Length: 245
Length: 170
Image (spheres, each protein chain N blue to C red):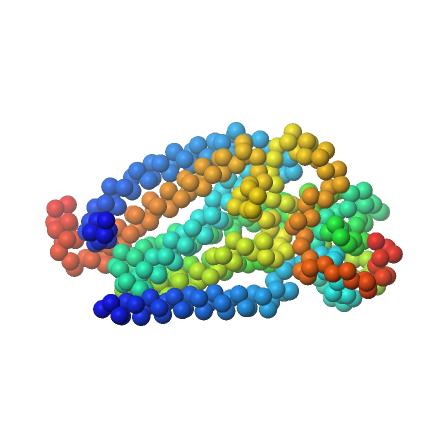
């Protein structure tokens, strides 16, 4: 098992493996997003309170879920990069940050578009909105740090340190609506006692969340591949690869 | 080689735990500042008489809405334990209605009522189609099931010295 793991963690074999897996992830993600969008926008009934406006949930919740999921992936990779100095983990950290930042921005913007008609305000400084904004800044910090430091491995280590330290914000974002009074609603899906949404409204959301997750997997593989090529451009395996292309 | 890895593992683990502990302490210390609004119970329990601008959150008590001249409106905000009367003039969010969660920004008035300058709607976490909602509504005509989202900061004690002036108007 460990030999298989070590072989996969070496840049050349990961490059090949990721190249084979990526199109399948993209295909599955597109199918799931199409099914989820149809289910959410057409099949799901209007909400008793919010009418059709609630349907933005099918973008907002998956985006917010991805903002936390991508950060967790990045933080785990960062931990591995700091302790075991694994090249692949360093690459995973710098590859995840811009995509995670995009999901976070999408969650914030879709939330504002939803907040204005329902709450009556685009933005309030409650614990959930503020901690999610901090999450965006953490992502942007990792991106900025990576661009600021010339030497890629040193940059990745600095990014990893920030990513690991910033992980403390992930449980804060999730539990902000439990620990403090907020204008933002409490959790609908991941809560004690089960989801407070009927199944015909819930399933398209779960499908969209899985679709977003697989899409992130796809971007991660593609971005890690190009980052690896850039970092390993002087090595023999990249030169052979380019020569054969 | 092995020892260096172990040392790094220990260092990073201590860092994570340290940051976590620091965050926990800071958030606990600033608990009062992080919470977005006071509930009526908070205002009573903490004997807040300040006229500073603050946010008050709770449910619009059923049947308490009274429309005045023009855009004037008054209603009672409840957290199922305590109530505060609220007065407001201005535009209301679409979701504003009997039994709805609201967060009112404004000041405590001398007579124990709350004069709001902005009203936001706070909906709860449940989503359901109309037909399901009709059945659920019948089940709790009191409209009290949403008070879970309006937590008092302190465990409610049997306080015997509330804002007596406000009580009369509640």
